[in-house]
Every structure is written in C-alpha cells, then in structure tokens.
Image 1 (cartoon, rainbow, N blue to C red):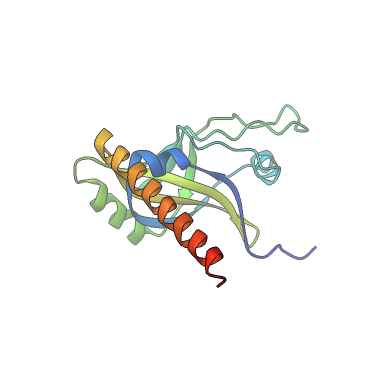
Image 2 (image 1 turned 45 degrees about the horizontal axis):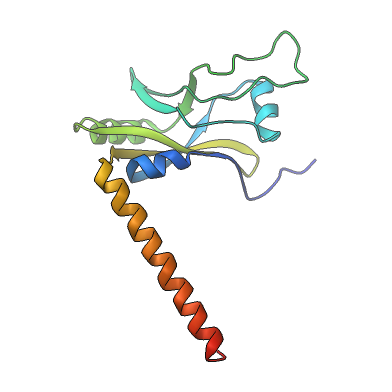
Length: 159
C-alpha cells in the first residue's frame, strides 16, 4: 500500500493559542507504540492539558491523552503516558536556551500525520495575562467586523 501524502491533523491545542503568545514553532517526531498509532489514525487524541519538557537532553511530551485503541488486546498502551519527541541535538539545545528565560515553556500545538509519519508541532510560548487575552479577543472581533463590512460593500456595489 503506498504511503499517504500531505498533512492530516489529528488534534489541535486551541487553548494554547488563547493562553500563550506563541514564539518559534518546531516539528518533532514522536515515539509511539502500535496501538497509539492506530488510535491516532482513528482521530482520537487530546492536547488540552499537554506540555513538553526537556530532561537530560531529551524532549518529552507529557499529559497528552491518546485513548486506548478500542480493538486492542491486553497489550494496549496507557492513555496519558510520557512520550519521547524526536529532535536533532542542535534543535534541543536551541529550545533549551530559549526556555531558560523565565516565563517561557514548551507547548504542543498539534498532532498530525505528515506523509504517513506521526508528528507533533511544539512551540516556545510565553503566558498571556488576562488583559492580553481580552485584547486579543477584541482585535479578532474588530477584524471580523471589518471583513463583514467589506463583504457587504462588495455585495452592494456589485464587485
């Protein structure tokens, strides 16, 4: 069977986009067992409470929920186990330097399949304060109103 092409998103962390200012993004491979891959291919994963850490020069994805594969046997995986992320040593050192500044953390943004391989997009993020969140929401609402007005004008003037 030929390998699938393109990018198929399994799970996104929309809460992270609301709670953090996102900095540099990095694509990482992920070490999975067979039943975890099957569960991901079925579209079952949650990143709401997930985060990443760097321990002894290795990057780990923690608290990501990949539910047990329903057709698995007693060899099924634990749903919230820690999963190792695959990055080059230079990338790990760069991320380590960036998160050494106070207030920065590694946040997973998405789990997806890229050309048949499971990948995780992680980002260096800084937490937003409550007024930042309100400001972001207000800017988004204003942009939506502007786009709506522009579309309405185009419709009225026949363009």
